[in-house]
Image (cartoon, rainbow, N blue to C red; front, side, top):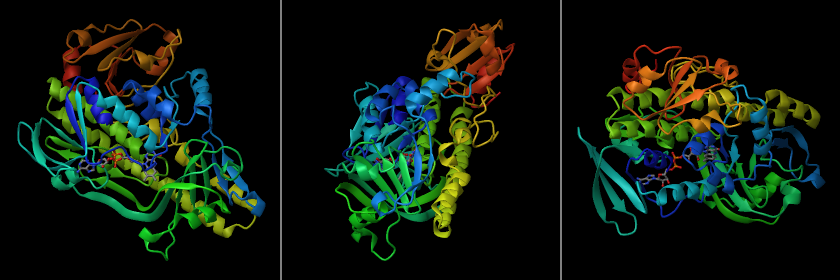
Length: 503
Ligand SMILES: Cc1cc2nc3c(=O)[nH]c(=O)nc-3n(C[C@H](O)[C@H](O)[C@H](O)COP(=O)(O)OP(=O)(O)OC[C@H]3O[C@@H](n4cnc5c(N)ncnc54)[C@H](O)[C@@H]3O)c2cc1C
């Protein structure tokens, strides 16, 4: 849906098919990180998403507990405190040094987010979105792709001809299978059990105050709205056939006592650490979970998929509009696969920390010492700004924990607020933007631009240092394409940029 929205905004028609009749009932993701929110803002959906998310005033605290039943000795061991989105907005304004995102992160489940994305494409004149229609097969040739679709209700098949095909069809991607692309890494790392439920028992479920996550060595309780909707991710009992598990005793055992609830969905599932060996072939591409699957620690699954969709979206649109050079589409895999690999490694590292904390629970009898041990192991899964904002397309890895602002080509453009209080990010055009600081001559790039280009003059010498050059050419995905203090040959820069090269 993100890719469809991206293509539509670039004026490219597309057809989206989804085999299910509706969006998901499974909560799955619960954090949309600040980088995804910046990108959603560019797609014009950030406010609509926030309207269905946890209120901006609510915190992102992660709290480790023994159990929630205080009357049975349950206690809080350590709380990692994180500001609410509203507090983060103030911090972003106050620390206007390029280290901050344009948007804070957002707490929301996939049950809430998907209908908003669906609404954002459903009535768009450039998107034809069909639910209850499955993709079955494709053949590609030099000019395009012929896809076979099957209507889930009638079984009727049809063929459609398109220029390109993107398999955004999840972990068991049929498009990936048909391409014969293998997954490398570790499948079925661990067995989990998800219980999504409603309950008003806040005296128990918020026993130590509002928290985003309450965690023990047996799992995580996610507060989906800080009111009445919750998700427990725990381990299934090893002695019960997965399909016959009763979620109720699992909930009671985890919380520390029985409480009233209505279970919405419950099912076993496996975590994976997998990466597709290729991100496409010819005119067919993979994005999202079709290309990578992670353990949810860190919340990188969907967030990485959003990055894929934006990267692929502007490149496909450039190809359809006719100004992409042959290397541009090939650069999708070159740029996004290393990010997929880096995020998979980070997700694995965060899981290792959780395992170490689990071991501490078994070893340490003194709750104060246990709390100190947890604090010392830390919570990098919610503090890895280098992973979330510092991914670069020039091969430079950077510190996973720290986002260091830079305009090196391939890096995300740093975000700042201008003297008049407006955000530079909000001044970027939908396609390319040339930022001009100081007296550099932008005309070689403007005069030779084969793609839509807007120029933003930043008349603030104090900000020029953050942007490291007098001219910065920004791509549609807000990554830097090129920078310099002068541009003698604009046409040469464009040839490289539209061929997917970083200069
Ligand atoms: C417990 C859990 C917690 C998570 N937490 C987070 C988090 O906090 N942050 C985060 O970023 N990510 C998180 N994730 C990961 C996130 O849910 C996934 O990465 C995300 O859903 C992937 O999106 P996708 O569109 O690529 O694939 P999917 O969401 O799997 O969507 C693929 C769609 O394709 C459809 N489809 C499949 N095959 C076909 C076909 N042949 N024809 C037509 N349609 C088809 C499917 O029905 C499905 O709707 C979590 C995941 C889990 C399980």
